[in-house]
Amino acid sequence: MNSFLSPRLVIVLLLCAGLWLINLSLGSVHIPLNDLLRRLGGIPFPKSSWEIIVVDYRLPKSLTAMLAGIGLSLSGLQMQTFFRNPLAGPYVLGISAGAGLGVALLTMAGTAFGWHLLGSAGGYWSVVLAASAGAISVLVLMGLAAWKVKDSMTLLIVGLMFGSAASSLITLLAYFSAAEELKLFTIWSMGNLGNTGWKELVLLSGAVFLGLVPAIFSVKAYNAMLLGEAYAVSMGINFQRLRWVMIVSTGILTGSITAFCGPIAFIGIAVPHLARLLFRTQNHALLFPAAASLGVVILLACDTISQLPGMASTLPLNAITTAFGAPLIIWLIMKRSFSEEF
Image (cartoon, rainbow, N blue to C red; front, side, top):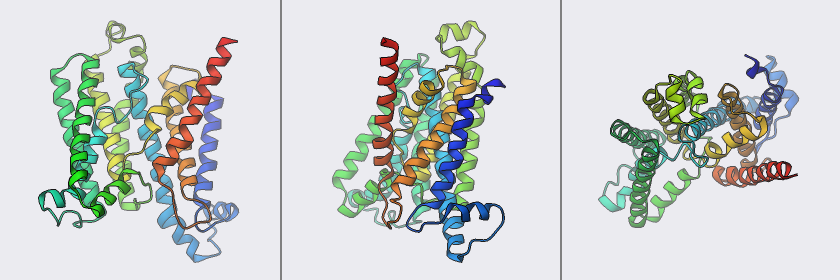
């Protein structure tokens, strides 16, 4: 219980609330924070257009950023702990590449195979379904591999090979595709939080909840994994069960977020490291809420920057997450190394 009362966690949660309000306030149309606060208290906006902007666009987008930040951060934390590999992330098992292959087949296979109707059929929902189908296909293959392969590092390599195979197929499709098809796929691959409305948000939140439940109930098992597989087994941890929890949880979280938002870089790999550095703990009872809240903070901040406040255009989300996050992690690591040296 004391883990959840960490002063640093309280500060991060307050920062989440502040960035959420800023994210709702800034954009091509500026909405004053005091009017937002009054609207939260039940007082209508002075302009009816603000109600449409906030309720129909900015609020679903900000909630999507929160869900994506939580899901990707906890996916990365689970994988880094299970594989004991600091470079493990939610896209290592090939789930994201599978989703990308599904979208590539939808958007770029027209020229290669003559499937000209696929690219325009269904619009946004067709992209979601294609990405979901690709992610589920790789998840099923990973499940079959986990059933046959007992060694964790071998399973990690198999996941990397699945991702590489999917990426190679995407490259071939891109080579044979027309310019318009390639542009559609490239835009999707940049990541976008603004495509989700309330209907999509309900499905995404359900999928994220479904992926989080098995992870939350495995906190003790992940703590035992810190000292290795043999120690975890000696402590009574069902290692095979934990492996399936990791595969299913990260597969659902990564697959659903990629399907609705496209692949989002940096968050899954870097945020768990950031949580460990800032909170100085390996206890997953604290790391889970810490990583989740930091994922929300960083993704909300990056989305706010990508909106280019006061301008109608937006920047690619992936460019901001990488440019904003990578230097931050490097600075924290260098600061910690310098402190330990002296």
